[in-house]
Length: 176
Image: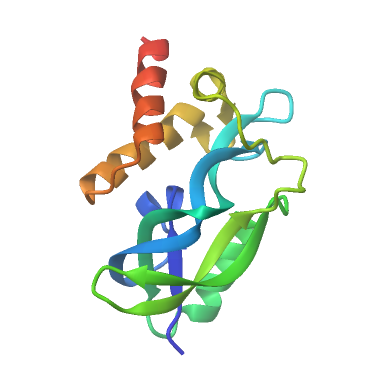
């Protein structure tokens, strides 16, 4: 069985598993958003950071990357992803259809936000997001690093996210 994973944030630049094929893909019905407080990786309980999540939105679609897992690595990859992504149960694992730019539709393991979880913080104004990201640090490093790596990688693969680009520029200004 072929296994695909949909990446829209840190999985783009740090998948952590062997990728056999990467294709730009669109996931309908969800928006990429800094709508999850990070209390482990990019912040702490005392000073939460923000990380990207897929927030359900009927009128939206998220462009990201569909990554085909190397054959024979499916079980190991799923175990790894669950350990990484389900650390606080704020994400929900779903198999969702994504549309690849080459015309294929594939089912992909996708991590979306649970809007009922206490780490959910959808709807924060961009300036407030920038202020949080500029100061938060967690177990995997500064929140700014997460934002910058994601923005740079999206740009490198030709994907445009105006809100993320604005945040990138604003956080860099705050940090200088």
